Image (tube, rainbow, N blue to C red; front, side):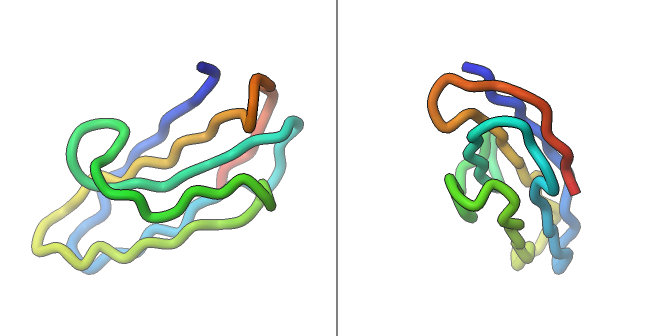
Length: 83
């Protein structure tokens, strides 16, 4: 599909807050953590509003990789801004 996957290492006890401030199409986005891409554990999956931010606190004893996945709701594509 047209999905784009971003990732960041979140240290133990650290908090990730991520989302889109703007986009030009009907998107959906999800945040996941742990394991290999696209992440073994779901934090949140959002269709609307497209600009809803997700937050996750790493309560594990070690650094964990978090993934933010941006995709179209159906078949669209376009530009977006992460924050």
